[in-house]
Amino acid sequence: MITKESIKNKFKSIFQEDPIIARSPGRINIIGEHTDYNDGFVLPAAIDKAVYIAVSKRADDLISLYAEDYKGKYEVNLHDIAPTDLHWPNYILGVVDQIQKRGLTIGGFNLYIDGDVPLGAGLSSSAAVECATTLALSELFQLHIERLEIPKIGQLAEHTYAGVKCGIMDQFASTFGKKDQVLKLDCRSLEYEYVPLILEGYTIILLNTNVKHALGDTAYNKRVEQCKQAIGWIKEKYPAVVNMRDVSVAMLDEMVKDKDAEVYTKTRFVVEESERVHQACENLKAGNLVALGQNLLASHHGLSQEYEVSCAESDYLVEFIIQFPEVLGARQMGGGFGGCTINLVKDDFIEELIAQVSPKYAEKFGKELTVISVKTDDGTSIL
Ligand code: GLA
Image (cartoon, rainbow, N blue to C red; front, side, top):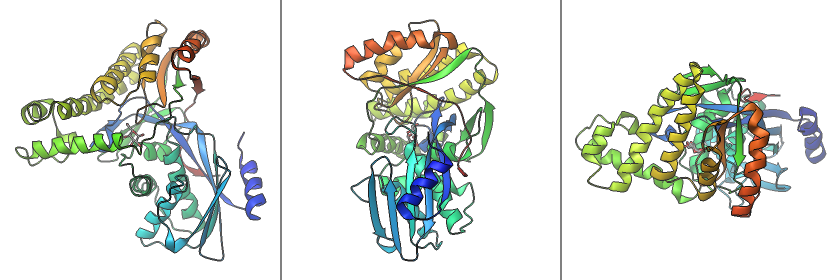
């Protein structure tokens, strides 16, 4: 288990100093996928799996990084940072770049990173790295970065150093998450509301397909572009429209349908998915878990058939487990193309479900299915 002490000891053994330690959690998302970069709504929560960033000042201008997961070191001069092919340092260097672009002054530093957010599972380990790095550096160099700026810095780091044109959901949930709550976020105004996650007799479990999604892949950015393309066409008649948030299905019917059937199907999904967030949130508040489960299923259908960001493994899992009446809903979670499904399952059926689905999955795909239990937790903090 990772603790403040274990991080501190490890840091000392590498850098011979006492660090400042920031913790930032991964996230789940109940519903609202690919709506964030369209200024729509999302319903995520921070989880009890996190990234830990420990830092100390150096006397020179060197940035010296050590990642526990990769048992790897990376060093670069503060004034020469650029994206690297090594990948993992990019989430940290991207944050450093954003901090410098804001005119804030930092010096050289040592940084150690560890965590227990499974990588490539759609639980936003990268956002957690970005948010923890931002807070750790803010604390170390007394930058007084405001809390609302943490997710913004993280998102831009992802755009520039990881090459993924992501929305703000992951970084926002990682920063502002709260134990026992989900966060209903308006990705345009960044106004948010906490909604208690009360699931009488039911539990959320994650099934990890162990298909590693690579969001940097062009597929994610292509969806972002397709949404922009639709906006371009709609603006020809409706100049007040800024992005998909302002678009109705009627507008898509009028301005997009005849121009490009694929863009039409994809953007209609975005409009409908954002609307589903409101419905799902009301269902959660009312304790109507059956209806909430239906929202999840409708979301998966759209992600798979319309937005086309699912994969054979996720589709199989959703179809297989939904045959059981004890499973109210299931869908692929996160950016897509693998990672985890999020599932709403009756408490006393979980063991039985896993016993049934695991061998079937292994037989069909020759891969292990991993079950991840998560609890909601608090957002980014200094330990
Ligand atoms: C990834 C991105 C988020 C969001 C989701 C899909 O997790 O980082 O911004 O777009 O995919 O909902």
